[in-house]
Length: 300
Image (cartoon, rainbow, N blue to C red; front, side, top):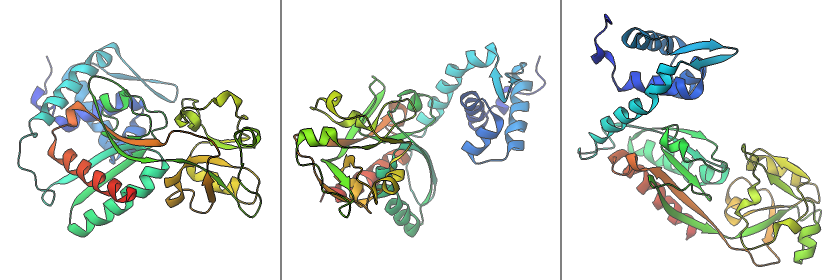
């Protein structure tokens, strides 16, 4: 029988367990949670003692979960969800509580929405802590596992437990260097032009947002990059072009010239996405309302 009382397992301890399980590393779990490796190791030792199982064993450069650890993933997530639900109807004052969220988004929404949000919150005295991970083509498991609590993406994942709301819409534009070239004037010229594109971690291209056009006719990208901020150095001073939303001109692609596409293409919508467990959380609602207000201002 364990010598440690099960009531030692508070929400922070259970969150550490899930983070180690997702990261397969004590050091990565510490980085994600913003604590020291020794604090994570101490918590893991407590868990091992309470549960009577090693939970994780070293394998190469990482940790491999035991069968016991794998079997605990869903029950522990349900416990944390239940603890979060206890706060749903509580009075909420953003000035008296710390608001901490992990957000999955790509370069443009991150740069246009969140800097002014953080500045305004700090000016008001709100203790706001935000962490960011790239969303790419997002997987709903990012939200279900609580690896992030909010997404901003043009490609919202589906699921009965996944909520979404459209924030804004923006037409696609051609970004180029006007000192080196003019933009393509026709569909065929566009298809024959050398492009720069972003390729997400799962291998899909940023062109996935282009709707209503035959992408098989477009020349394969000459340069593929991991994020949108890397585009300007390749386009500037060259005859390369990039196709991205008009809002990119106010964010990562501000240094480039832009022109409308020479063919019809649907505009791109950006959605805010969250898991049902966060739907009624007052801090989460507060942040969503602030994001909506800033997004609305971008559309004006």
